[in-house]
Length: 175
Image (cartoon, rainbow, N blue to C red; front, side, top):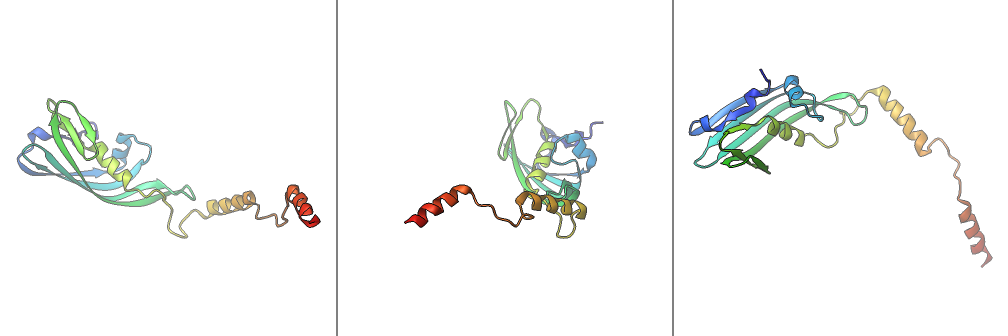
């Protein structure tokens, strides 16, 4: 069985009112999604769908941790995630997505929420992800500091002056 099959929801089969779903998002989920940003994690996503007269309101609550690479030492680190997101789904002639409105093809009636949940997780990962102070791989940090110091010229205390400035100084002294 496809591990993403439970994420396909038959909207037409939902009863009037609120329906609830709960999804476990583990390494198997991230492998099945096959997206580059996240390969590992342990989260739970709760979805409540309110069936209205002509649309469906989907409210997602996702909480847990994902494994991302530290920007400094490149070791894996756990990044906590807690997000609340909302979508509105309607039936139409063709499927489409526009911000928080999803048009589901009326002849199908199936909404696959697997990718939406993944996108909500990715959006909630901070742009910069770094271990807490003192938790980075010390060997990598030492190498980084060594190479950064050499590249920035901190080891060379002698200051070299561009010869063009010397020529300008001579002109200024003549006045």
